Image (cartoon, rainbow, N blue to C red; front, side, top):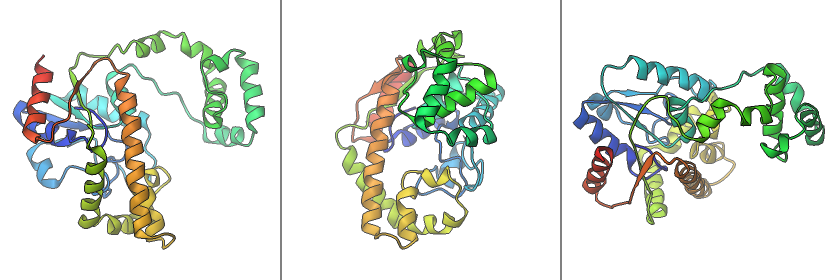
Amino acid sequence: MLGPTASGKSDVALRLAEDLGAEIISVDSMQVYRRMDIGTAKATMEERSRVRHHGIDVVEPSEAFSVAEYQLIGRAIIENSSVPLVIVGGSGLHFRALVDPLRFRPHDTALKAELEELSLEESVARLKAVDEKAGRHLDLSNPRRVTRALEIAALTGETPSSRAVSAEQRSLDAYHPLFPFKAVALDPGPGLEIRVTDRLQSMIEAGLVEEVAGLAAGMGRTARQAVGYKELLPVVAGETSLEDGIDRARRATLALAKRQRTYFRRDPRLKWLTWSDDADERYRSAAAGLRS
């Protein structure tokens, strides 16, 4: 059960899991952090008592937690599960890390720091020296991606060009999964902006600002990028008003939903469901989509 934020997928997934006698795996990059509950719309303790959830409350907000680390945990759950599993969330990369032959290359902190000292022009020149056609497969105007390509080339010998023609990449491009599955996605529909605004207000009333304030001092770089938290951190620091923080969070959430929808729309394996204001109708559509 996939789709953009605020599309109502979590409620549908919970009902599906109950009907199937299944457990839930969250594919959400920020629900892995403990105590980041309100702003990530994490399943409540009551909901977790009804259906077992995996992939949430894994690490402290002070820690970095990569997709590669998530992949190890998630695949182990899938391989060892004796019950059906319902994958639910809005992170397309985390979803593909579970179901597709996605391999994450190694990192070297010292090497990365050294490469980040280079100008973009120097980085591009170095990359072209080992891969003359790198620009065909990589945005050479993006410093982060160029640096990462140099790091991978130094550690593995793999270049953007060699990766593009690899069997792994062909499989990923063709959306060939590691195992069979059925997937439905909820389109957020035309009322998304209203729902995002209402949900954000409900989060504020539920104590989101206080949650951010309690976590702020111990949040690492990754956790601080979470939508909602990132925009409210300046509020609790006294750097901007609550009204400004809420407005920034609303706009960031809408932008996130747009990116998520674009990412998922590329996946031909997903059956898209038309939005309905009726929760029962959303559930019936999802159940029918999985049966077809």
